Structures are given as C-alpha cells and as structure tokens.
Length: 431
Ligand SMILES: C[S@@+](CC[C@H](N)C(=O)[O-])C[C@H]1O[C@@H](n2cnc3c(N)ncnc32)[C@H](O)[C@@H]1O
Image 1: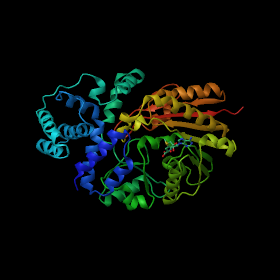
Image 2: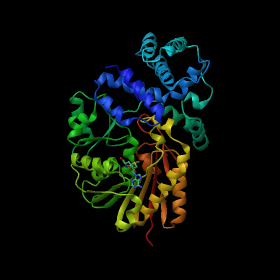
Image 3: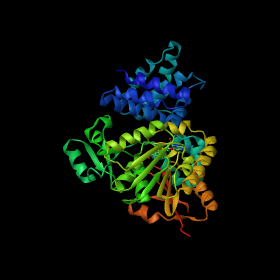
Image 4: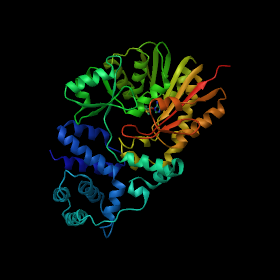
C-alpha cells in the first residue's frame, strides 16, 4: 500500500474543500496495518499542524509562490518529512514526493525546492503565528486575551501529537484494575494525572476492535472532556438533562457517576449521533438514558422544569481541539463566531427554562473564544437574575488542573494530556 499516495490524495481534498475528509480518512485507516497507520497519521496530521510554518519555508525557494494546489500539497508533505520526520531519510522524502507529482513539468521544480530544503539553509521566522503555525488572527487573539505566556503554551501544545485517552467505565471496572489487566495483556498504559478515570493508551490500531472496548469497559474520551462531568457532580437518583449530547461521551460518564441510578434525558439534533449514543450506552451496560432527536431550543415545549442538573456542552468553534483536529485552525472562519454565540445563548435560555430551582447548569465548550464563553455567560446571567456563578476553582485544583478564571468560568490550560476546555457552573437560586 502506498501510504504517501493516499495521504497526498486526502490532503489535496482538504486543500480543495477546506473541510477535513473525515470519512475517507477513517476508511483509509481501516485498511492499513498498524505501522502504516502510524506513518500516515504522523504525515497527514503533522503536515496540517505545521502547514503555515512549512509554507513559509517553501516560499523562500519559490520565485512565484502561485503554484497549483497539487504541487503546493506535495511540497508541504515533502518538507514535513524532511524537517520533522527523523525516520525518513532526506533522499527518500525528496524522491517519494517527486514521484507523487502527475504533471511532469512540475517534477523538476519540486525536486529542486525540496533539495534546497534538505540543505537546511532557510531562515527561521520571527513572527509568532508562523513560528507556531497558527492563522495570524488566532495567534493575535490568544496573546490579546490570555497574555503571551498562555498563548505560547496553547499554541505549542497544538503542535504535539494528540495522546489516545480512554475513560474506564466504573460500572464495570475500577481504573486501577483495568490498568493491571491491560498491562498484563501487553498494552502500554498509564493513568492520567487529572481525571481519576482516564487511561493513556499507546496504540496505533483501531480501539473499537479491542475486547475492552467491545465489552464496554472503556470509551475514548479526552481528559479535559472527562473533567466536565466531575465538575457537574451528578448523584444517584437525580434527573439530569444532557442538552447537546452528541455520541454520549459525557452522558455515559454522568450515568457512571450516578451509578446507573436515576434518569438522564439526552438530546441532540443529529439522528446519527443519538444512534451512536444508544449503542455506547448499551455496550457500557447503562440503562438510565432516554434519548430524543430534536433541536434543543424546543426542549421547554417538551419537558417540565424539573431537572436537577443540566449539561450544555455547546456546539462551538472547537478551536481547543486543534491538537486532535489540526484542520480546525486552518478551516475555521472567524465570521462564524457571531452565529455560534447566538445559538449558544439560545441553548442556554432553553436550558434555563427546564432547570429546577436550586438546580445546576453546567456550560462547557472546547474553545478559547471569549464571545462563546465568558461573554455568553455574562449576557445570560444579566438576563436571569436568579442564576448565579458557582466558583469551581477549588474543585479544579483538587484535580491538579491549571486554568485561567474570568469571573464566570474557567478555561482549562493544556498540558501533556489536557486540552483547552471552558467550564462554567451556574446555580438557579430558590426564591
Ligand atoms: C460539543 S458537541 C457535544 C459533544 C458531547 N457532549 C460529547 O461529550 O460527546 C455539540 C453537539 O451539539 C449538537 N447540536 C448542535 N446544534 C444543536 C441544537 N440546536 N440542538 C441540539 N443539539 C445541537 C451537535 O450535533 C453536537 O453533537
């Protein structure tokens, strides 16, 4: 199998449509052996992660930077292998890339540029956004709103490969028992530092094929995402609404923390996601989740105001997932922020209407954009005088988490396994 050729085709698709070809990538991965998957992932994700920096390097050797997209993509892949993949000798990076080019007239150019890059005589950039390979507006936004140090921390983190993190299903096993069992079976596993249920697994294969996954002992979930349900603090017997539940990664976690006792209503606008949520719950031995496919803004027309707790893990710009999905930095248009924050506020208003007095509403996003986080919560509580902010700082410190606090919520700062996640906990005060 020519993995480079497949990577080239998929990266060209991304270049053309500015949308990551998720399904095609999944299909390609499913046909690869473990070693091929590792190489493919590093090449595709790495080239996207470093794209802005790489283009800067390439442009130093092009008389005219307006080369056809197919040539630009090949140059990026070759340059990534030369600069960042120690496992690939320079001569192989050059010749394998040249052989990808269909138009003969461009082979000479690609060969010449890549050969110059192997000499490593290019200048390093001074500009922050090029150095850390981020769109200029994002680098500037991070510095303006989070200061230089946090901005660099966040951008540096986006450049690292994303670790594979599982959550142990405590309805079936304690994490430590699962760690021992997996170790005995020869897996390379480590407990996560912050989440008491997280397991870092070094594995290039398909997790959904593992018996641990099939038997419902684990689910794939990033560590920051695991923290959200701990902050909500669900209890056995409560009635909880998960208003944008997706595949149910957090819904199933909430069910575990409730010891599968009580009731959860999980809503999402996507039929496919709710179907996957139902499958996840079944696999994990959870039977307290009722699901509904609907626009969550219609929730007040369907349900009573009797939920003890509500999770609104809102649809968002997802920029904090850049370590896992580097394409998001390249494809997200900042003009979309306004519409997203409008939808988020409408969802907050809907959640408010079905929350019981004395109940808690947790708002979370996987983004650092303030208009989607602080500004929304500020706006929301200004219009709902019975909603007050719960200070979650001590709780986050219990989990040894570093964050920035804006008076309304906390943005979790990234580290080896954490990624940026915004969490705001609110309480509806009883009269
Ligand atoms: C951040 S994702 C949720 C992820 C999920 N909580 C998890 O942990 O796996 C946001 C979800 O909101 C859903 N969504 C977007 N607009 C919606 C709407 N108007 N009503 C209900 N769900 C919506 C999307 O389909 C998506 O699954």
